[in-house]
Image 1: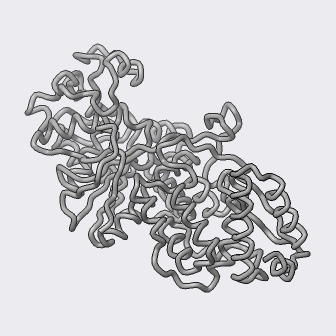
Image 2: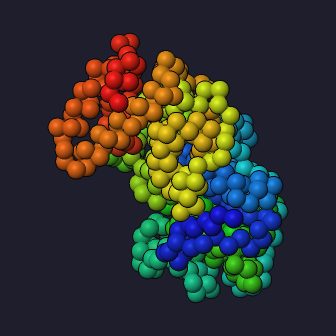
Image 3: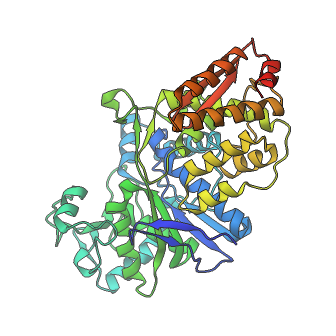
Length: 456
C-alpha cells in the first residue's frame, strides 16, 4: 500500500497518514457559507481536498473513505442578504446551494459522502453546548452562551499565536457580558426576522464555530483522521473548534492531521472588489473558460503556496489540455503513472503530478495519461476541441523528444542549439510556447509531419 505523507499544521511537519481505522478513513473540510456565488478563492480548498479524496479512495478503496464538507446556512451574512433583498432566508440558501453545486460540478469536484447543512443539526449543537457548560468550559450571560478560553490551556497551539496576536487577529468584540475578550459565542439571542430555535438559554441561534464541532462528531466520531480548510480558517475558526471539541470530549483526539491551503491572488495581487480583480467561478465559466482549465491552473501550484491566477496561466493550461485531449481521445484508462501517485502521496504535490502527466504525454502513454487525468479530476477532456487530431502518436513522440533535447540544451546554456531546434520545429509548422508549466506546442495549418521525420 502507498504511504501518504501530509503536512500537519498542528505539528508544523510532514507526517505519515496512519488512519485510526483503515476501513473507514475520515476527513472533514469546512465548506461554504451560502449567501452568494462562490468566488475563485472559495474553489481552491474544494479542488485541493477533492484530489486528496480521490487519492484516499485510490489507496484505501472508495467504500472505505468518508468525506464530510459542511454547508453553513445560518449566519449573519445570510441574514443581512435576506434583509437587503426582502427574500426568505431558506429561499436564498437553497438557491445558493444549487449554484455552489453547479459551479463545483463544473470544476470536476466529486460530491462528499455527507454534506450536512447546519440548520439540520441544531439539536447536536445544543447538546454540545450543554456538555461544555456542565464541564465548566462555557457560561451563560445576557442570553448568550460563551466559551471560556481560559478553561482550555492549549488554546492557540494550532496557529501558534500569542494572546495579543489572537485578540488583534480575531477582531474580538469587547462585550460587557464577556468574562474575557477572547471568549467566543456558542449561542446568541435572535430577534425579529432573525432565524432562531428554542433552547435552555432562550430563543436564539448558534455561533459559527460550534456547528463544525457538532457535525463532525455526529458524522465522523469524536476522533477522525484529517481536518482541512483554507489557511484563513486556522484562526479563529479551527482554533475554536479544537477547544470546543476537546473540552466537550476530553478523551478524544479530534483531528489527527490539520491541513490548510494557502490563499489565492489574481495577477500578483490580492483578489478584491476594490481592485477590480474579483470574480466568481461562474464569471469564468460564463466567459467560456472550461472547468478543466480552471482546475488545471489551480492544481499547478502546491496547495501550501499562494496561488496566482493569471491570464497567461489560463492560456497555457488550455494549450496543454488541447494537446492532451488528442492523446486520450478514445483511449481507456490504464494504470495511474507511478510518478503521479508518488507526487500526490508526498503532501499532495499536484504540481509534481502534473509534471508526471507531461512525461506520460511525452512518451505517448495514452492509457497512463488518461488514468492520471482521472486521478487529478480532469477526466477524459472530451469537451475540448482536439486541435491536433492530425498529429499521430509517433509525431507527438518526435516533437516531445525534440523539446526534451531543446530543454537539455537550454540547461547547458547551448542556446544556439536550443534556438536551432525551435526553428526546425517552426519550419515543420510546430509553434513552441514556453511557460511556467513547461514548454507547450501547437500545430498550425502548415504542419508537415514529413519534416519531423527528416529531423531524426
